[in-house]
Image 1 (cartoon, rainbow, N blue to C red):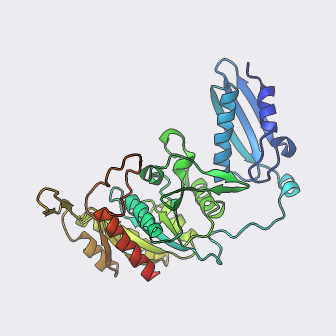
Image 2: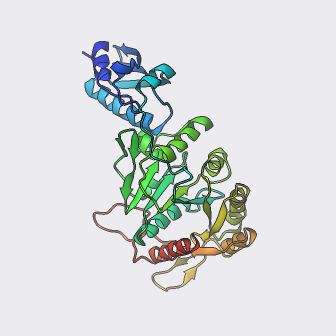
Image 3: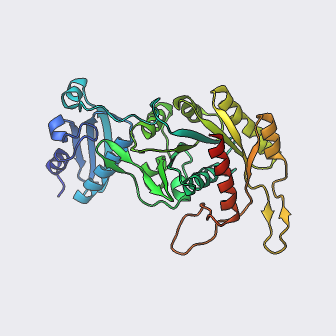
Length: 348
């Protein structure tokens, strides 16, 4: 039978992800209770930093360990340790500079759109893969917190791991990836509000072991909401690509996202027109399903140019490789993304 003592013994051997001391040493176990009739365990822990990626990782480990111990359901709450306890165990070694440090040589490239459904995340993923195919060290931050999709698009099934007090991103197709999707169980909705989201995004920059990167791509949320504005204000300098379809309404809405980039002093690198046309495999004729001219009109409004036009196609099916949105290098769209990547490299 599961008892409070069993839970406390388990927690005594687990460590604070920042101080690297056991919860017994930090006296971080504030509350443990068990509802025997439902086999529900409630735990309240004090840790050095709350609302971070490390907290999410610890949360996953705790839930798994407690369920293995016999709990049917688990409720976790986190508070912050006192300054005195943190100072007692705080490592004195200086942390490595983050990507937001002014000494960082990583080039930031934000991918934005005015509305959802135009393929912004698909463009982010394939542009990153194309840059990696050209020999660059590339990372992606899936900053579309409410609509995270990058891990699924790239067929990523594993999750990040902890190395000391840093999160090690998952890597696939030569691209390092960090996404809110790694910290959400069973595709659950994210119901956090602005301040917590801001802290989570900051941890993606500061608390992830990215190593040396040539390019970091940010898949921004569509539109001009708080999260998109937070990201714009967070990164020191960035180039930006605006994604639209040929439809005039999509281009009209995308202009707002472009204006946000201009207002936050981020240079627009170009426009990518996604779903430009459908080419029949039978006749070879192009059908302009969503009309024409949206990308060119948007480029004119933003005083830039169209750097890519992607056709409406699926990637080839490859046996044993699951990546539903990644185009192969020999695919027509894969070739188009290589041209996009080369233009990015030339301009940066």
